[in-house]
Length: 76
Image (cartoon, rainbow, N blue to C red):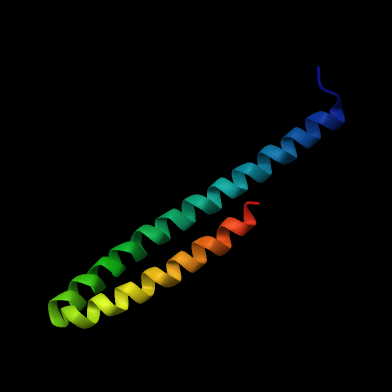
């Protein structure tokens, strides 16, 4: 059986995890809406100026790769 201190620590840990999960759900909702905005922008760009749109999307993807590499450093 857990001591009172262990129970308090477990409660605090669970509360913190629930807080993280709540924030993650909020981020997920915002990202879903923003992803739709990105897709609308892609459609508009490719319909209006396909050649320019390709160049811009390539630049975006390169920056995304840089962000991914930086994020991976946090996991080490």
